[in-house]
Image (cartoon, rainbow, N blue to C red; front, side):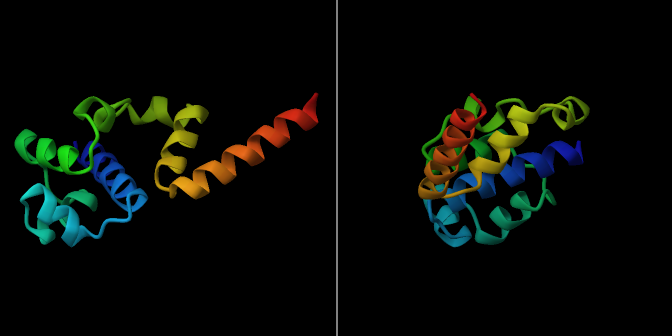
Length: 111
């Protein structure tokens, strides 16, 4: 269970930083305490569905997107596209676009 809590916490952190929000601002938007948000992001607390819904709403993402592909960590270890998704989700929009352009150029060079 704690692996899922850590993975969910990392996802919350990724979406929060991608949107340029501090833990304090996210907590304010979600109606939670900033310490609680930090504990969730570090996987130290198991969140209630209600608090996760508030956080997802504050981040303007669906619960489905937040929980997408969470689960079997062994499968994830061998899932390169998912690993790329997790890496990119923690980057800013500009960084994501830059990485995407790099990948497009690399793809062109192989042909």
